[in-house]
Image (cartoon, rainbow, N blue to C red; front, side, top):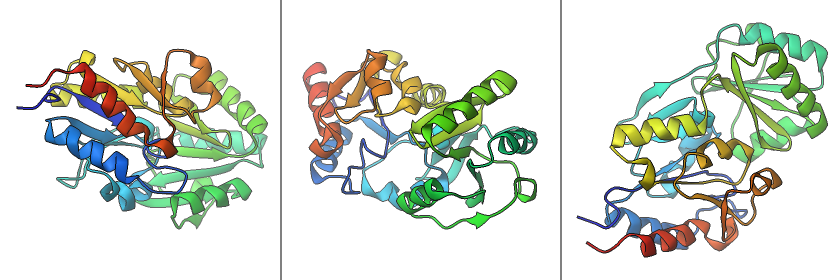
Length: 272
């Protein structure tokens, strides 16, 4: 029996658990090992897809299924299997084709299984695929195999705001459309969010809402921060999270924010 037997901690990956030096710090790993020894369950909840997160899953001691593609996929790495998934509707090909005709500079990156396809790649595309360290295939939307777990739109922020508005006005009943940073707009199936999937995971693990804690740095993390008993955000979080006004700000991703959170939880839960 451990003091964290009933606790689930879900962390965003980039710029939260994974710092600006592109590593998970020794301090965070040490804190997580303590958290797990005391019975805690730790997972990552990321916008990255299976293809782009899998090379990094070993960097931290994850002991619960991982939330991928902004909540479109729940994957158990210990059993190497999908727990549940919510792919984009097949008509996403047609809908995003309409968007592309109206906003032709937008790069559109899609994920089918472990394959990555990009329509109209641009400078933002190259930055993104370099950061997540993946190869990809240039492809017209109509030629991309479906279904897609998600699509990522890439362009200047102002252009992506127009894209977000268009999608929500025309097809808001079909899609979630949320920024993961100022140059990446994530599109998932309606209802597929980090918040929805972390609640599903908590239910599967028998974790009560009062013992569910989430941390994230950007707009796409707000849905899971909304369901967290205490919503945590690193000091380097985006203005969207800070302006949301409900997050408890902890140390930055470069100052071992996960270790900081575990220290806070350590003071909240009595020793067994």
